[in-house]
Image (cartoon, rainbow, N blue to C red; front, side):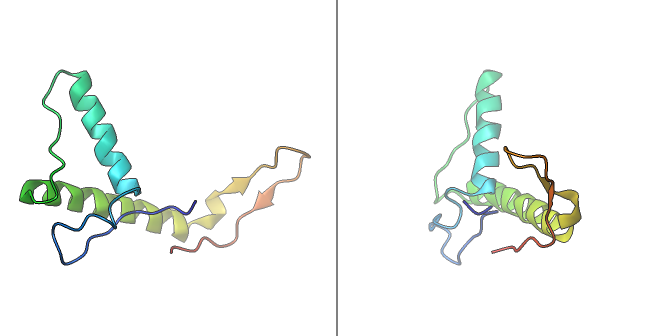
Length: 95
């Protein structure tokens, strides 16, 4: 599965580019932490402007993370389960 940072469309009620993204995972984890502390869970209504603003922040953070990772492929080493060879990553493509 590719790393999907998340995105928006011009239609504020269309969350298809947000679903199953890194940004959505961030939102879900924040919600879990809020509930753990007995705080009110997050609204996830696609018609709520505050929800879109929060998701915009998560999308921006996720994009920054993905772009940073892509800019530094030398930071990754793949370690195969069998054998002792280290595979160096030369390029990371952002899709």
